[in-house]
Image (cartoon, rainbow, N blue to C red; front, side):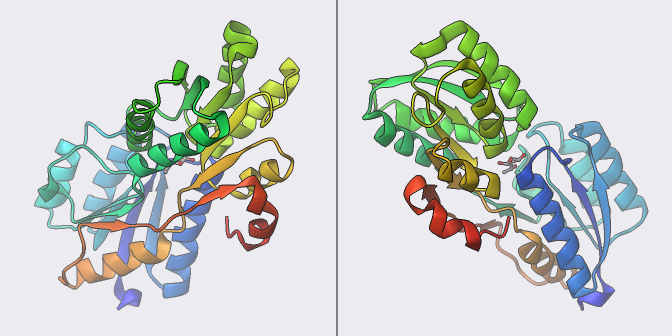
Amino acid sequence: MYQDLVVGFAQIGAESEWRTANTRSIQDTAIRLGVELKFADGQQQQENQIKQIRSFIAQRVDVIGVSPVVETGWDAVFSEVKQAGIPLILLDRHADVSDDLFSAFIGSDFVLEGQRACVEMAKLLDGQGNIVVLEGTAGSAPTVDRRAGFESCLHQRPGMQVIARQYGDFIRARGKEVMKTFLQTYGSQIDALFAQNDDMALGAIEAIEEYGLRPGVDIKIVSVDAVRGAFEAMLAGKLNATIECNPLLGPQFFETALKLANGDPVQKWVKSDEGIFRQDTAAQELPKRKY
Ligand code: GYE
């Protein structure tokens, strides 16, 4: 029963609109179901998340959930969770560990998102142009995988090339800062921007306007997440497309947690179902958005 379940969740932080929606989904679902949730915010630091997981073990929670800020460095603490006999769910971001160290992964196919972003970009650029890339957090699953997906599609399109890439940590202000330096170096040679999340694209849009170019027109922009702010930017003609990445994982998370606590079988990878949104349908989609 949900009411008997005690779950510890080690969240990454509050770096983006996506993350805030994800946290809200987890907290609201726990309240709705009557699950006792111990929620911890890692403030984007792996060592905080590791400490929080250890504290969940000490408190003997029934199930532990974590969204690993980076992919590597989890073997020791995940082994401790396993030894304590507590099921572990990776939510949103996966980790570079062997399959026996966690019970389930719930989240998106980030490689596919990167491929989709490149396909959108190719349409916008007619297969030709210089691209700058704002990447997320170094060593994080969405950064590594979105890059891999984007690159694999780019290899088949020799007319398009990445001329610069830099980390912006999935944060709007960092997106703006880095875009500013891209513009200082490459100016109007830049035909397009691929931002690995909407927040960084929104920051970059400000930098492009301040530089005197038109975002979405002079510099085409594709990003990932599909948060409300992205739809508003598309309506203003400043963002060209966003690839959906669904943060509303609360219901699937607790459903999986309950099954694990009861010893029932679960799927190893519970994938989220996602789409692509462009300017032409932004007005119609915006009122339907839940995050
Ligand atoms: O795209 C970004 C967030 O891990 C999928 O993290 C998530 C990413 C998301 O900060 O906005």
